[in-house]
Length: 334
Image (tube, rainbow, N blue to C red):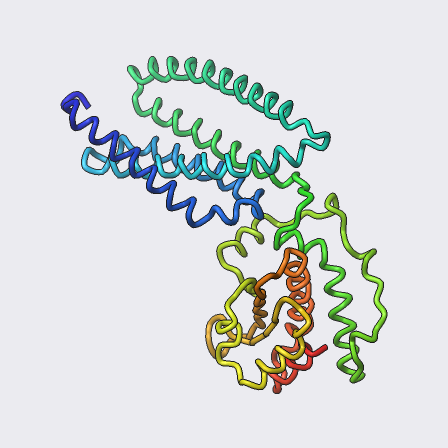
């Protein structure tokens, strides 16, 4: 803007970058605890939010002088979130590929590849900018249409290529979604035997099961990125790490005492309840709450999660039974 003074330009720059820093700090506070367990989701999120920031930069000239600062500030926030998410997940992805401990070699090659791609993009961008500049003098609308068309196509290709790349990753660590996929056959088998034991009034612990062969290897696990992202922001079915008061909210005292007795030798408690997402008239769905005790380890957390999956699978098909709480108590005591 030729009419802008040096002071107003400096203030606008400081506000734009300052809002970006504040947004980055807020994003780090809200999402930093999930970077390790949701590597693929946040890697894809980084690319998408970066494209959102670039799109806002493209839209800034159309926002008008009174709103351009807000648009560019929001674009800066998006790019800050991209850099934070990409940087946080890069270490886990590099460690995944460094099967021989050659992380330095991989980082060097990745940096070289990024430099080469940036150089090629710069050369092609300069050529495209010169062509659009000459075309704009003759046909302004055509130049705008071509620039937006190219940007849209490249953005779609960028998101699609990154989605395919992230989907091909076969990480050797477990998060919630990968654990559900890896142990799906185990959960189905255990739930079926639990129902069989309930029908015969037998003790599930006395049944002999060989489920080790049903566990999938890391290379056989291909979780749904859409499903895992949805559960990341809208968890349902299993609530991990809830408070004791929240897990037994609205439950009778005898139900709580029964759970304490069943899990007295464990480092966790489970409780299930049946609710309706949209109120009366809709099919109810079961929800399992997992309470972790002080001193519980990662093994205890995994055991509690597997136990919660088996309990959820056992009761979700019979949530319409009349004595819901009695049936749930029987399943927990198994």
